[in-house]
Amino acid sequence: TRELTLAAVDLGASSGRVMAARVGPERLDLTEVHRFPNRPVRTAGTLHWDVLGLYAGVLDGLRAAGRETDGVDGIGIDSWAVDVGLLDADGALLGNPVHYRDARHATAVPAVHAAVPPAELYRVSGLQHLPFNTVFQLAALRGTARFAAARQALLVPDLLAYWLTGARVAEVTNASTTGLLDATTRQWATGLLDRLDLPRDLLAGLVQPGEEIGRLTAEVRGETGLGEVPVVAVGSHDTASAVVGVPARDERFAYVSCGTWSLVGVELEEPVLTEASRAAGFTNELGVDGTVRYLHNVMGLWLLQESLRTWTAAGLPADLADLLAAAARVPAFTAVVDVDDPRFLPPGDVPARLAQACAETGQTPPQSQVETVRCIVDSLALAYRRTVRTAVELSGRQVDVVHLVGGGARNALLCQLTADACGRPVLAGPVEAAALGNALVQARALGALGGGLGEMRRLLRATQALVEYRPSGSAAAWDAAEARLAR
Ligand code: ADP
Ligand code: LRH
Image (cartoon, rainbow, N blue to C red; front, top):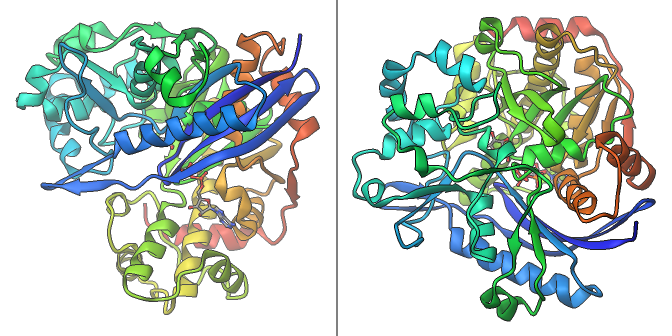
């Protein structure tokens, strides 16, 4: 084994970054070489991703990685899930991928459920019902000129890998977020595709994390100054890479992958496809090395991001660090909301929606920006509490510690409240868990590491700074807060 330099491209809903990782059996250093904002764009009533802008950011990042290191040995890409780019018969992109927060996807839910009832969809795909799962997006596109011209649908990381290498694949962890992958056989659910009248060859052939997708094309070599570097499939779903990047000691852990979304759950060997699991909104996404990410999507830091955006647009001060510091000093539980309420999904005035939700549950709405921030953080911790408890109940997996990774690990108030709410220690960090998980899977594929997830996590514990938050306060206060939310 030898040390390698890997470029990890990690595209989150709020920003994209390219990190250069130096990895060997006893080494894991991560350097950010490029970061760029990810700003959705609305045109003619549809919310899109600016995918060419993101690709330009990836090329800039790869060029920077080449410049700032002694040479790049591999490239891996992960991004948010579910969204696809459609390619025509010539392989050209048919319009910008539609954003999962676009309202149109949900219009196809009744038609899909009429063709395949929700309970059956769950038994096959094991996926939490979210109105933007790819299956609904594709169904909503049926009948459009674009869909008629489409020959292939590539998930976002697969689309970027296609532009880098010319190879079209479907990496399996992200494929598991489409609603069209069979959670038991781990193959495309051709039966579902047939019944939903979706062409079987719309989806590309599956690859596993660790497989080489292809080498940089001459065009990309010219753009970036890199050589014939392999693009390696990683957990291309950002949450799959983030779970690899959880520095757990053994299997008795829960995780909160805490960015725009908070993905809260446990790691299992087999899916849980029961009706109780469906009713609780738990998903069985696939992880690296054949694991199952048994989790629930909690609305996440989106609530803070979108509140800040609303305040900025109104000319109000909106510095996150200042607001969080002030929120730590106001009383807890003045008002709490169910953050999973679908009203919070679309972009818009989140503070007004929070106030409305408080009023509907007989609580006095937050009276200031600081109280609004406190309401969000209390409510998130409350949701993590419920979700960890339900994950334990439904999976039977015991949990001694909650690992909180992603940008939220920088939010000390949220980390402490999560420890208090869950009645368990929280180990916060790494912030860049997804990029680390991405780099670790590449490193193993290219021979710099041996072993399984346990070995990767040992290396994470040995090299990454973590902060521990001990649980404090009483469970009764959290029980009382929870009781206020009629569910
Ligand atoms: P994504 O990958 O979904 O784009 P990230 O994991 O990058 O999200 O997390 C972004 C979030 O992290 C921000 O919305 C913010 O709430 C939080 N965050 C980032 N930096 C800080 C900070 N210094 N203090 C508190 N929270 C922070
Ligand atoms: C987080 C994430 C999450 C998905 C959502 C669409 O970035 O990938 O796991 O559910 O985006």
